[in-house]
Image 1: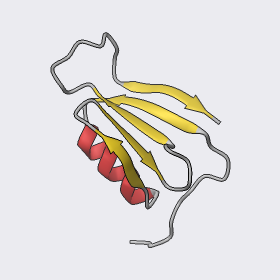
Image 2: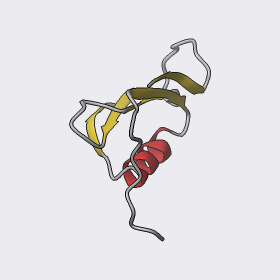
Image 3: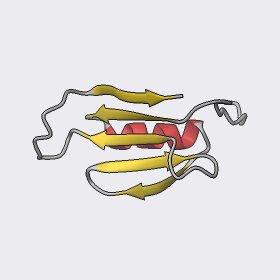
Length: 77
């Protein structure tokens, strides 16, 4: 496995709605060599630089009705 860090050159942030919350969180932290800035049972914010977040994950697997389906919610470049 490569130890090269992958980081986009130009990227604001992306928000994903997911039922695989912890798996996606672990994956983004690993792939981007990132860190979790904030996490609770509903949402997590990951960054890999000085920005407060680059990736946000919304947990659809908890028992609340937010009225949305899984998938990409928003990408800002």
